[in-house]
Length: 218
Image (cartoon, rainbow, N blue to C red):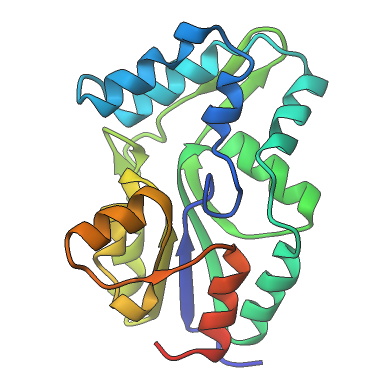
């Protein structure tokens, strides 16, 4: 096993899963439930406020909650890809603007352990998923709850080899902090980096990232 001095900071929703939690949640909510996200995209509310409002509207039981998590479709072979990363000296750090409650639940069932920086929350069956900001912690952000760029800078400041993987708007700033060969993107993030002329490594499956970091050039 190589020396553990490399860090992969990865988004979760839409990066390690096929579908974001909030999009799966919207399938169980009234049509107007997407309004908070539309306000966020128009710049009228924060990312955290939009997600928290959507999550709080879930009136489902625990079985339905687990069915919702299954709809996010965690990539098959994720545990094997992570094991390969570990054997090559890479540690996984998840940085998410979503809720730690469902991330921890998914990873536990997948047999995966990782450092997780995400917004705390509690699911109350029949009442909703109530997400809270993490408070004034080192990686706190007033707009997303978790400042992913601060997470990346934390490891860069230690002189470590840092890679970042993401797909959405909160992933742009942290992606730009790492070298192009350590910058993994798809969906919105890939489109935005391309429009800016910023080089990156496109990925379709999260296991592609493991393959690159374990055997490809930086």
